[in-house]
Image 1 (cartoon, helix red, strand yellow):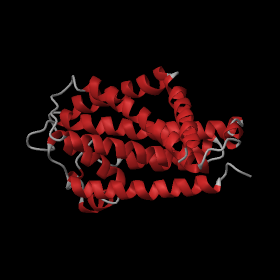
Image 2 (cartoon, rainbow, N blue to C red):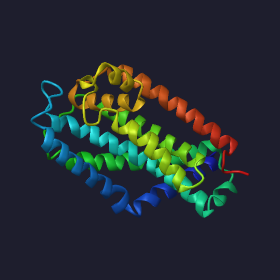
Image 3 (cartoon, rainbow, N blue to C red):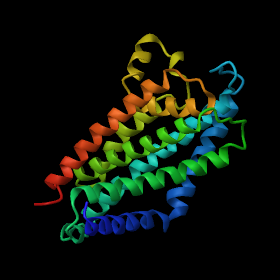
Length: 256
């Protein structure tokens, strides 16, 4: 990208970060509180009844899943809500008259979504780490899956925001696609505890590999190889990023 494009992308990125940071009580604090409530309820109810790994208690097992779930959901919410709000209110026209390329849009929206996802995830980690012992077996795995997970969801949020024409459509996308895939990805359980049919279905869910690889970074054990998870997650990002860039290049549902 040219210097002008870089400056424009940086300005749009700053605007998107400022948009969620100005209401941080709602966009950051509220998701952290929600995750703490999940931890208190599920951890208290199942700590002595569910055994996942030989050396890992259930509450400790639950924390990385809740952290990554928060990262994914908030990264998606940031880019999708920003685009649909701009389309509904009509202020998207101010971006359309700028010389920003589709790459500049992509970097700004996905970058801001990544920042929000990681900020919320870090908040959840800091607060929930007080409830159970948590080790770090591989910081590199934690970082790479956090970045890729947030980037994938920020890109999916961008696609959803481009597709949706009103808030109802965006809510349907989130409630019927994003939410089920997130909750059925092994956040609250090990997929190896599932019957064979549902175990096979879980392995078709790319969100499972994000959470399993992320969890491997803490405990050094996981349901599948972290290298397999990295291949699946990396490939998923390339696919959704390519789709988002093509939709932006065409001006899908944002240019008449």
